[in-house]
Length: 134
Image (cartoon, rainbow, N blue to C red):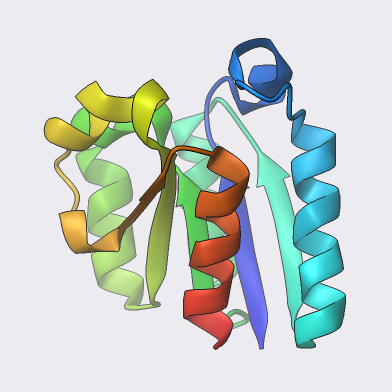
């Protein structure tokens, strides 16, 4: 299986707001390590641009079996990302860190069943990956 992983706005600054000083680079290494042990491929991107997210989703719609997308502030406002995800019909999960994302989770326009929430963002990503690939 191939997964598309999209880190949204400000995830490049993860080390600045992560409790355990996890950086985006360290998170990506954890994802790639799990990919090797679980035998799946992943394409990883980080962007601050909604249009780039839409392009990534559309271009990869026939190439991936699952999507992990960290929405950040787009939780409350990005109906275009929500529409695209519903059109392409690929299973997706949204990893979140409960203490950092409470407002986003409470006010999300996305289906809350797709949100994987943990007190640690790395654990949320790992749970999301395990749920998609089994």
